[in-house]
Amino acid sequence: MKTEWTLAELAEDVGLPARTIRYYIARGLLDGPEVAGRGAVYGARHVERLKEIRKLQREGRMLAEIAQASHRPVELPEPEAWWRYSLADGVVVELRGDLAPWRVKRIRKALSEAMTHLKEEDTDGNMRV
Image (cartoon, rainbow, N blue to C red; front, side, top):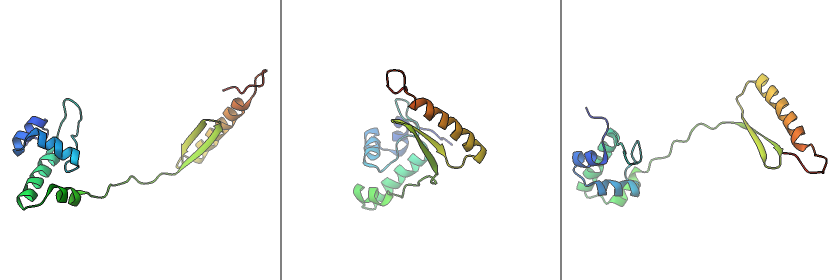
């Protein structure tokens, strides 16, 4: 069974003009290609979604209704804890919160040394960075 389609192949297989498929993508009815660009690649989920859109249209649904009904909640990634250290004006370092304690201790020591170095003044009284 076929697993990848170009836009032209997809249009031919589902019986829709390529322009219509691009319109559906722009309106949010259909996800964009799996691989974007000149050699865009579409998958089986695109074929199924286009068939579903055509079925709903045959049942009398408007494109706006189909688009609204298809808006599914976006799955967010699990939250991550981060530690943020401001070393000097415009210099910020962030560390993932799940690092091993021994590693955090070593990094904090290195950051402390870096902060000391960044705050040292040269002989003219200007900050070194």
